[in-house]
Length: 282
Ligand SMILES: C[S@@+](CC[C@H](N)C(=O)[O-])C[C@H]1O[C@@H](n2cnc3c(N)ncnc32)[C@H](O)[C@@H]1O
Image 1 (tube, rainbow, N blue to C red):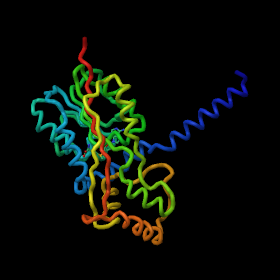
Image 2 (image 1 turned 45 degrees about the vertical axis):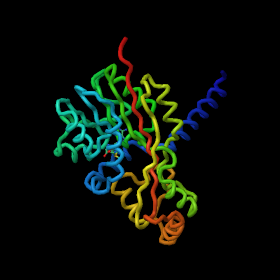
Image 3 (image 1 turned 45 degrees about the horizontal axis):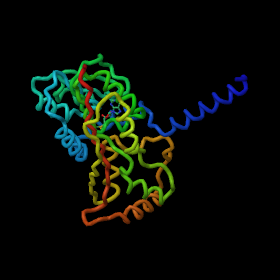
Image 4 (image 1 turned 60 degrees about the vertical axis):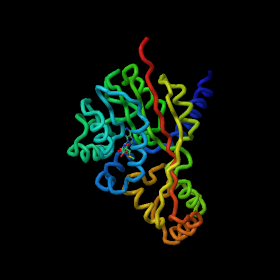
């Protein structure tokens, strides 16, 4: 390859990387956003409670020596895991120091570890159960999350996760789209991506399916306040900057009213539940 064509290829690769990156939230922003939300999170975490409880119910009957709560947040499910497995050693891991600081005094896990699901600071084959509720949708590289799960699980160990896929918050996304066509809602992976990545991982898929959860709000402001309190408001690159003008908010409210149901304004979450198992050693 000539120098010139090599340069052109490198430029195209860099451009492709830049395009890919532009669809991903920045990890430091994710950590900072969740750290800021630690104090308000539990008061508005109705969906998170329902999803984590459903995921708990889907776990197979195992008694792990050590479990890992991946993306443990305020530690609600670390405490549930500790109650379910009183003899086991628990590790709560989160990328947001603020969440760990909030969770630590409330107990549940033995260890509170700052770390990234895509690059776990844990030894190979060191846990029997990985539980992760509503965290891996924040990871841009889901294949790395699965590879790390396979690495840190012992043979026969289980990775149970709940995450979000396309269709989540579609009412809010479509309403904003009608106002200005901009990105106001975090992007979510397609179900087919979860299926492909899980099938290609070294883990066996015991189950993988999607269930919609629909919450209702009296008005748009209640929904957007809740997303902010959860730390889950839009932090995508490409989101609009600057102030949101009164006229645009009024237009958003009018567009969202088109979705109103008897119970209020719906917000749909498409939740993917996966239970994977590391094959036992032969
Ligand atoms: C919506 S909260 C869920 C918390 C908890 N699992 C629950 O269900 O209440 C998502 C959590 O994932 C954490 N998180 C996001 N990206 C992460 C990553 N790459 N590695 C570890 N934790 C991450 C966030 O800091 C946040 O605490």
